[in-house]
Length: 103
Image (cartoon, one colour):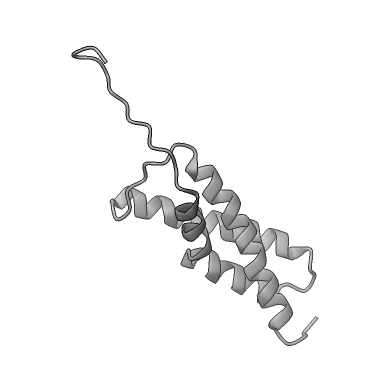
């Protein structure tokens, strides 16, 4: 680029890192398991997955805002939100089916 121009570095996101962030996010696991255990119908697992995804994304944002984890990925945040939703539903389903029947 020309001298004095704006240089922007676009770093491609790493799918393996995004997968690890979504899979091992403690907020996703805690919220999904708590809501999955309390669910009395399987349809509520979708809501549990969405709530867990929102909680996980909030934690992801806080960690990045404080500076504990650098965020370089362009478009990776949407992928993290979607993967956390899917993993949240899986965690909620495990808690739902492993909890003794109170339904």
